[in-house]
Image (cartoon, rainbow, N blue to C red):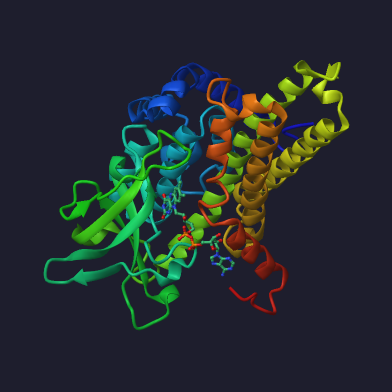
Length: 396
Ligand SMILES: Cc1cc2nc3c(=O)[nH]c(=O)nc-3n(C[C@H](O)[C@H](O)[C@H](O)COP(=O)(O)OP(=O)(O)OC[C@H]3O[C@@H](n4cnc5c(N)ncnc54)[C@H](O)[C@@H]3O)c2cc1C
């Protein structure tokens, strides 16, 4: 049974979101892919916000008490959106990953200023960690953040790359080293930066193999200044803000991987039952049903791990206690997406490799980003092994 770990409320949410995405996203999905159409992406982001589906995940903001955002629903939204168009999904997944630290760590007035517009679909958020010299090794970042007491402002100098929603976002969450004399874990600071801050610029937009329609580019900070209250959490505690955001982001990426994997599987399964070769359906050939069976069990494993991590989070488990489960969900779901995309192309043969006959080759290109973004598969394995062997530290 699919959805085994979900309750009635979760299933009702999925039914609603499916209806919404079929109405708003599906008719635009072709333009998003063909023309890398940002306007189409942002139209669906607006509609999603207006329909209230981003708010549902931060329901506490609207009822008065600040508790954990609802990750199960965020994951279902990611899965169903990625199944229909991964570029759109990655835009909102990034916005949600930006919303999370704002929700958790921003001063109330800053939270209200930047978070509400994201949740209402009027604004897009972005998270800036990766730099030219550091990706996985984020503690080694070169961006510097200092506090100018005379002007009561934070000052950021640095350069970030591979940033989703780069030139399109309204607010950027930025990490930088604020005390170079101590370990980065104790000398990193996180800030919220509005897109109109002087000194912020976007030198390059990348031309990626897939995810067409989601803008990814460079973000340069040339002595960018923000007021004191734009600090997230405490000064020099940015690493904690980052680690907290990782769990949330990885579970959502479980949903992304699951959606992309399902989209490939559905195409492959339909083709295997229709196409004939050597006088029989393709699906009757042992080598093909082996592939169908393997795609099926991998998807179910990815789903169980993703829902487990989301449910754990929603029941109040986070931080180190969720690190292994969040990493497992991300690792298995994203590797499953790559596996299923590859096997779908194989099962479709020539049809799978051309743009003329359906989405298979698009899914193949899209899927490949998943084991890289939000912590590579290798980093996820490190996190899992580190929890399994707490007495020793696996060598990074
Ligand atoms: C489409 C896309 C969107 C992105 N969006 C964002 C975003 O919004 N914000 C953001 O901050 N970043 C973003 N990124 C960056 C992404 O998070 C990084 O690409 C990722 O963390 C890997 O960093 P890197 O590319 O510098 O590779 P590296 O860290 O240089 O790693 C290269 C390879 O070496 C492996 N490796 C590294 N260290 C070890 C080790 N100790 N042991 C074994 N293997 C190791 C890695 O797993 C990887 O396979 C995005 C990237 C892409 C492709």
